[in-house]
Amino acid sequence: MIPVTILTGFLGSGKTTLLKRILNEKHGMKIAVIENEFGEENIDNEILVQDTSEQIIQMSNGCICCTIRGDLSRVLNDLAAKKQAGEVDFDRVVIETTGLANPGPVAQTFFMDDQIASEFLLDAIITLVDAKHANHQLDEHEVVQRQVGFADRLFITKADLVDEQHVADLRHRLLHMNPKAAIKVVNFGEADIKEIFDLRGFNLNSKLEIDPDFLAEDEHAHSHAHAHDEHGHTHDDHDHADCDHDHGHCDHEGHDHGHHHHAHHDDKIKSFVYRSDRPFDPNKLEDFLGGILQIYGEHLLRYKGVLYMKGVDRKVVFQGVHQMMGSDLAAKWQPAEKKTNKMVFIGIELPRDLITDGLDACLA
Image (cartoon, rainbow, N blue to C red; front, side, top):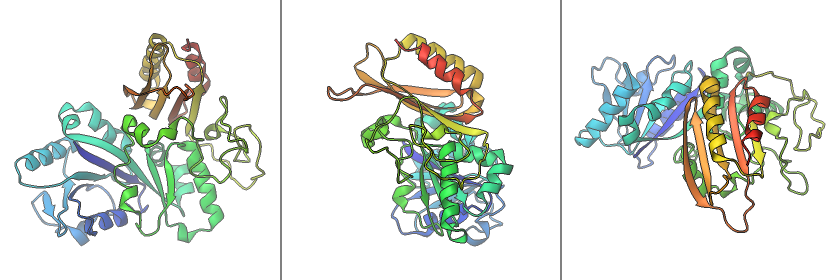
C-alpha cells in the first residue's frame, strides 16, 4: 500500500514553502506530489516547466510532480499503473489541495473508490494555519474551519509575525475545534519529515499499537502545561474540548484558570468527547451510529474511538469521515487495564446532547 498525505490550509498559509522543502530535500524518499493547479500560489514557475504537455515531471532528487487537470481518482490510478509498468518510481504520495478546498471529498476518494483503496492508504491530513491571519480566516470562511476539523496534525506557520500570547490564544481556539490533532509551531516550512509522514491518522489499529495512551490521555495533554489536575484524573462527564466559557480554558472539573484574555469565537466546528466505563450493547450501538451517520453524516467531519463492548474481550476501534465508518477488533483488554469507552466527534453544529443521550441509551 502506498501511503498518502493530504496537505491543506488556506491561501498563504505556507503549503508551497513546505512542499518545496519536501521536493528538494535529500531525504532519500521517492515522493509523488499531486498539485491541485487551481491554487493561487502554484509551484509551477519555480519548479515545473509551465508550458509542458507532460503531466509528470521527474525531480532531481527522485521525486515526481504532477498537476491535476481533472479528476483525482484518475490521476491516482494513472500513477499506480505507471508505477506497476516501471515507468515511474515512488514510495508515497503528497496531495496539495487548493487553499479554498474542503479536504473532505479528497479524503473520501480513498474510501469510496475500490481500485484506489486497494493501492493507496490514506495516512494523514496535515493542515497549515497562518498565525497572523488565522483568526480572521476562521471567522470569515467555513472552509478554513473544515480544514482544521479534518486535520490529524496542525502546523502553525508565520508565528514570528505575532506575539506569544497571540499564538497561545490561537492554539487554544484550534484545540476546541479539534482536540485530536497535535499542534506544532513551524517556521519557514522547517517541519521534520518525521512529523509529516507515517502519522497513521486513518489507521486506528496501528495508532493503538503506537500510542497506547489514546484511552488515558487528557485531550489537551499535548498542548497545555496544565493538562491534568494534580491527581492526574480524567473525568467522565466533561472535556476541555467542548468547554464553552467565554473565559476560555477550563479544566476537567470546570474550574476557571483565570485566563480572561481569550476572545470568544463561536466556531461552527466544534468537538466533544464521550466517555463511559460501562460496556456498550453491540446491536444497539450499531443501530444508533447507523442512524446518526445517515442524518448527520455530512456534518460529521472526523470521529474515532476505542470501545468496550459487552461480550467482546478485545478493544473495538472505529473511525470515520462523513458517512463512511470503519471498525475493527484491536488488541485484547489486559487484565490490569481499565475497560472504558472513549469517542471523539468533530463536526459542524452537532447536536451534542442528542448524541450523548443516544450513546448512553446504548450502554448494556
